[in-house]
Length: 260
Length: 298
Image 1 (cartoon, one colour):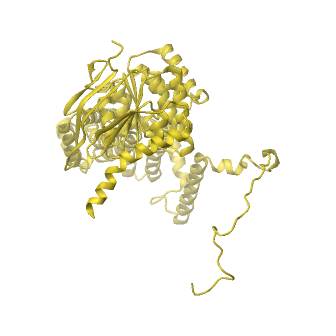
Image 2 (cartoon, helix red, strand yellow):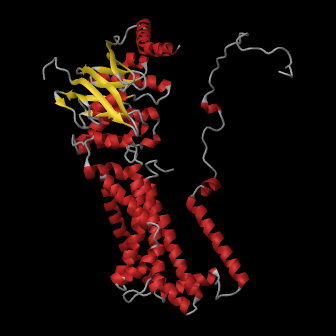
Image 3 (cartoon, chains in turn red, purple):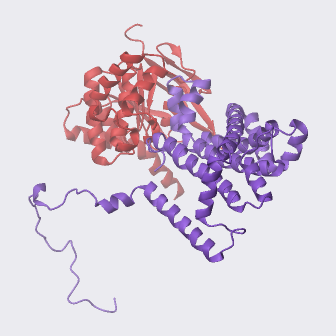
């Protein structure tokens, strides 16, 4: 692969899904490109189709228009080269211990087996500081710990891109901040590529290096911008946060104005 | 406000209250942080102990009532039932009869489960299969197995065949229905996780759906077991001996005809004891080793 071809290329993707009595267009002709080692954020208010977009990249949905290519290969179905980390805490298999959960991903996908899978699993469990809990069952862990296991599982697979669907949204504020810091530390370690969905502007700025802003109903690209360098000061971050906030909510104000 | 409080109301924003910072007491200073429960509390926490207590209470009530009634033909005492039970166990061939029943039961039960598994797999793989399962279940589940016995006798003759047939009927629908509803209730996230690993077809069913639906499957197995047990005893009572050696139902029927009422009670007692053992030993062990350990059931 050439250095300048994108790892993930999303071209003109329109996504639709059916509810019981409507056909809903979730995103309309969305384009973006993710490069290797990007921390790429999909940011937008609820209803902008960002989670649907992530599911399409995961291979759980087929675009009605446009295409998604990973390393030049068209995405058609779910696969272990795109590991998902979900928001829900029930993404760990309750009948397996922490170690078995991570190992199962490796063995079920046929990536590794036996001793090698166990070693790899323990290595990544150690990276998320859960070595002490390797033999615990998921129901004995806190929400933050469960998400860490899910992240370890995703990273142990060493996928081309890690897809994270608001993984910290269900956590309390203190745990969320801690998890964000940990995720960045992990990134410093391995420079994995991540596509991260969030509705929190602050989280997007903190975690991402590139942010795709989507507008709601249906989701369309509003902007694609660079985030700030990691150690920039708080004022710059606040200014960027304000800028993104204004861009996202200009519609809402206009809509309200139209009713007057 | 009709009743004015003493003095004017003070608003939090009007006064400057001092801020408070305190040092934490070291944990060694408290009396109790964690302390073991008393022996009595620990004994009471054992479900087995509580259940044995209930059983003893029931047996005592039985004994008292039977003594007050004082009519061994209508209602023998617990003591004489136990006596008859051991006597039948030693010399009356009760053990052999129970074993005959259990053998037939196991054949019918496992055949029913196998068919239920087949039907459920068809049901989850296609919409036609789902409709098929739903229609068949709503048709046959309300049909008492005993009602099929006359037909079974015509089709399979007087023997194990017709017993197994009615047993399958009593197990199949309960297990299939529970397993299917268990599969349907597997969370979407867990399904997506399985597909993310690239699992498909039978390995997806076996490694994701079955364990994820295990609480419902276990419930289905338990209900199926109870249905099978009562169907078998009832069937044996209706058409008695099958292929030479009768089972427990036959034992009860025979003794009723000879007015050996303590033996009738001993036969019923055996049915109850086997039921209690299977429920509290076999199913309980499966439960503690699976769904309880996994935190899927408290």
